[in-house]
Amino acid sequence: MKQANLRSLALGSAAIALAALVGCDGRTTVADAGNDSRPQLVSADLGRLVDVYAYQRIDPAVADRRLRFNRQPVLVAENVVVNPNIESQILFDASGAEVLSATYEFRPFDKTVGHEELLILWDNQHADEAGRFAAALDAAQAGLPSLASAYRGQNTMLRPIPIVPRNAAIRLQFSGTLDVTEEFFRINPTAIQVLEFKGDPAVVRPTEAFRVLSARVIPQGTRIVVDTTILGGEGESGFTTPGLPSSTDSVTANIRIAIPTRGGAVSSFYLKEDSIAELNALDSLGRPAVIRDFRSGNQADGAAGRLYEAEAPMIVASLGMGITAIDTANRVVTLHKRSNFVPVR
Image (cartoon, rainbow, N blue to C red; front, side, top):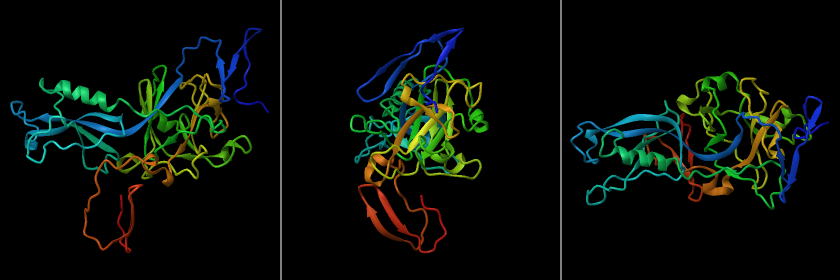
């Protein structure tokens, strides 16, 4: 049986030689002798998915940001991946004076939206504040943690499998523009797959080796955002998921992102193979695909295993419930609902 990463390419009757360099970590670098300008996956980053709002003045002459009655939140961008370390900041100090450095505020969670909404505390249109708004928006998208390229079976003593928080968004960067829409991925759900390992694909059939996980795929020019959580209004079919399943240990990759190459899923969605041979493997249907394997966070990972909730906990109803445990390290409160049929988020 031929391995997916061993291929021979023919040009007329002449074979094209591929030069391979083996690194100390076992990865094989394949030099592609072709001159294909098709897009290629070049990197991946992690962050928090938000909609971005501007803090626009109602009366342009009133500049005081503490006067909320003179401000209105206006949606300016949807599905933006921002730095997961951003937190809400208070506009005024204990004396009531304005905190000039205050820039970000998370709005209360809206179940019709299904993900966080970030208010940048500057007016994006007024001349006195537009520059600060633009700088804050750029800063919010900077410094995202990188997802290292990895594959299941690599030497974890030299290169540990990277961890992805269970509710993080994954932003994939490509070398060229991908001319597809979000509707395209709804019609062709296997074009980008998020898979959970249930067996070894080198031993069992791919259909048995993987479980397909639900995710929302959002194309953005040269980038594609994979939203691992589907909540509220995001779940058009009524299905929701709080994020990736937990890994069972702290070593083994349990999740794979697989993108069929060379039009394997749909001929119009053509992606080049990765230059690292080991990053070309199989998807859930056994087709050649560019892959990124990683480990989702678990309870032992603490704060690294799951992004903290941007919205502070609050009581929104008076119900007879109990607290059975508080895990401060992992920010987990265990409740006893006492037969109350209510959602707990």
